[in-house]
Image 1 (tube, one colour):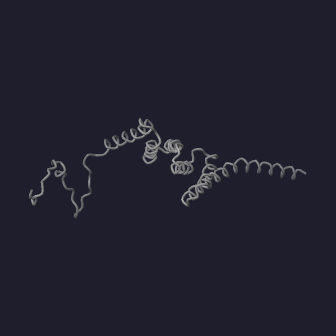
Image 2 (cartoon, rainbow, N blue to C red; image 1 turned 180 degrees about the vertical axis):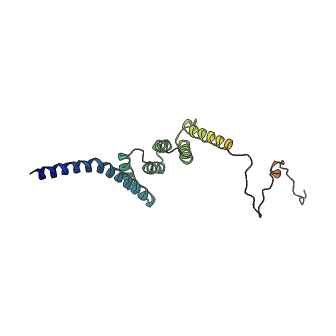
Image 3 (cartoon, rainbow, N blue to C red; image 1 turned 135 degrees about the horizontal axis):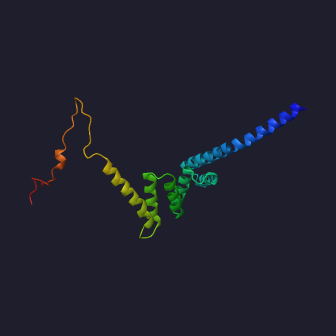
Length: 170
């Protein structure tokens, strides 16, 4: 009798543990699988099923980058203004140079003349470019070996002079 009760308790604790740890793992698996399916279906040109798979992945995780990218591409293909929302979400989740540039491109296509939303990522990119230029050394250090030697950059500091062609008769 005691063994049956102990076995029942162990079984209940095991099922609760499986429920507690197995359910999030299964949800993550479903999200990743749906996002991968969306990407592969998009590459095959099956836009309807790609949209369905992307929506399934986004229901499980609204910040899934692959599903957001598929949704943004589908919105771009259909010339929908929703592409701007998807590109904005992608740039918020992963603010890389490429994602911000895609946001600016979509904003220029969708918005009207003042282009307020397009100006913001472009200004951020310009600021990051200025900080990149200010952190790089002015003269590059090239490795010198027996075959290649670093040459001075005097030729670059001279002003450019245009010489007209000599064989022109006019």
